[in-house]
Structure formats: C-alpha cells, structure tokens
Length: 201
Image (cartoon, rainbow, N blue to C red):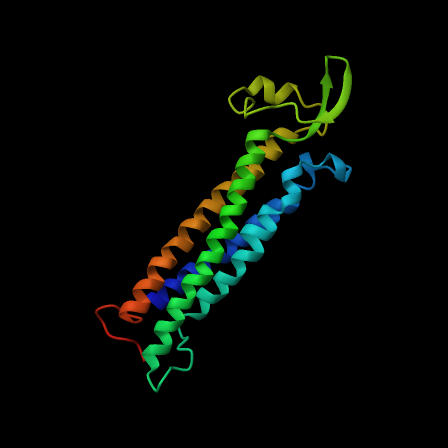
C-alpha cells in the first residue's frame, strides 16, 4: 500500500477512537451514572484528557491523514511528486501533535486509575465525607475494598475504573498509530508516495 493510502487508513481509524474518548470523558462527569456536585467529581476528569488530549488534539492529525491520499500541495517547482513528499513530511508534524495529545490522555488516565475515584466514605468509621479513600492503586487487586469503601455514588468505582481504562487503552492505540504515521511520513517524504513503485499521478 502506498504511503498516502496507508495514512488515509490511519485517519479513518483515529476518528472513531476520538469519538469514544470524548464520550468517555463526558460520562466521567456523571460518576456512577449519577449527577453530583461539581466539587465531588474526580479531579482528573477536569483535566479533559479524553476531550482535549485524545479528542480535539487528535482530530487535526486524523483530518490531515485523511487528506494525504490525493494531496500534492499543488506541486512545487513544476514537480507534482515534490508537493506530495512535502505533504507526507508535514504529516509527521501533525502525527507528533497527536502523540502529545494521546500521551497527555494516557498520563491523566494512569494517574486517575492509580488514585481511584472521589467518593463519599466513612472517616474513622463514623463520619461520612467526600475524598479519595484509596492510595497507590491499593484497590485494584482487592475486590472487597472496591465494593465496600465508597458509599456514594453507588457503583462509582467500576464506573471510574472502566472509563479511565478505556481512555488509557485508546490513548495507547492512538500513540501507536501516530508513531506509525511518523515512520510512514518519513518513508513517503524520502521515497515518494509509493516506494519502489514510483509516485502516483
């Protein structure tokens, strides 16, 4: 497959990933599927890792990749393939932006998973208050701890863990796809749109 066609496939793949990440981030504003006071929403949700990092910042690379198949940048110096090589080279810059955005989402998600959700729990066994009852991911391998500590909102722990895990996995996939495009763009810039097969016209 030529480098432009491969980039287009990457663009088509990134679009649904962006949508999934944005939806996950929005759902995290409703812990346990319930509406709560904004001050009781987990801090990492407000960092907008899924909306900004894996969403908005990833849309730009995806759209650029989709347009690479037939983009010759109007050619340069009367040479069509020169424009195509430049387009592939510029796609590496947008792929880098995608890596930064997805990497940001991955970091935010990893921190959120390790810290656990903000919820209402008993302090000293008597006083019910909001905060972060877990530390250093101690709840991840302890089902009893996950199911008993948080009192409200109901089901907040699996909700938090599931959605941030999806964001983490989607972000890693996006990083990998953008890294592939960096390599693909470099090959396209050096060899033309179709290495070994001549440039397409």
